[in-house]
Image 1 (cartoon, rainbow, N blue to C red):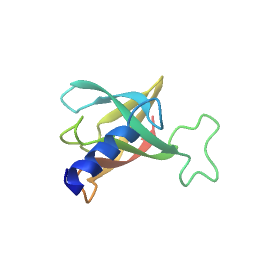
Image 2: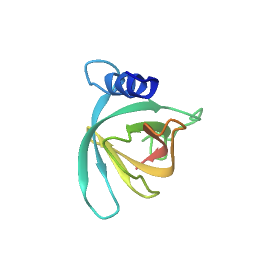
Image 3: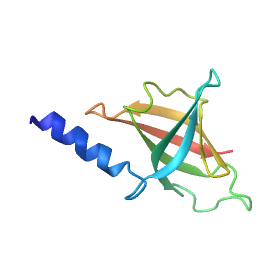
Image 4: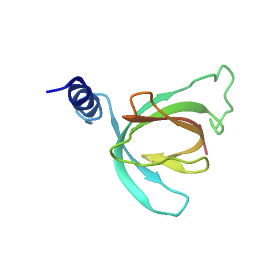
Length: 104
């Protein structure tokens, strides 16, 4: 088993909801929705969030195996919270999408 295969298996293990991931729905600009697991780091740069937390910044990571592309303006919904993608880049190993998002 090669290194790339082992690394892909490790990333897949992190994205199980039994470990670190959270169930979510990614909605593309076309309206197509995909259920998947994501890693959420919220509260980034929010020393003074608004009373309703609208505009709150966060980083969401999606497994590239679940979503082939992520574009600005698409959304990720976790529970009842909708996050809008403002920037997305594929990780260097091409196994994840790293997205800067804001709460809508």
